[in-house]
Image 1 (tube, one colour):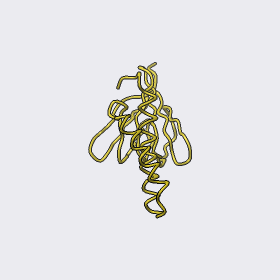
Image 2 (cartoon, helix red, strand yellow):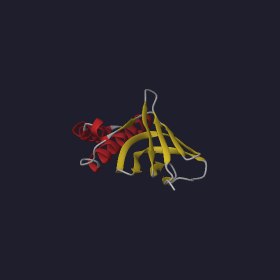
Image 3 (tube, one colour):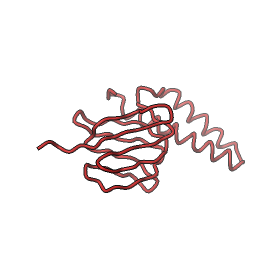
Length: 140
């Protein structure tokens, strides 16, 4: 009997980033991390900025996902997100420079809206660093 798989689709406004089979998908949701295996109950979840882990026959890969919605139904995980990047698409030196620059700006700001915007940018930079650092030896 063939091993059951999930279908993972990650869709951004500009492209289909991922459309492949997986053994398991682990994603960071607003309520905490969630792992999805074949046969998972139908549900949806709001995603945080964070790495999405894809476990398949060839090992584990990570992709940075910048928020969105995950819909799980009929052994398919569909992620609708504003952006997603593979480690090889991330310029880690730029992400680290962005983090330092944003952290400096946050120390100087007093406007709540500007602080919230910079906190979002900081989360994005931190996710980019996390995904690219943890995948330095992995191929995509």
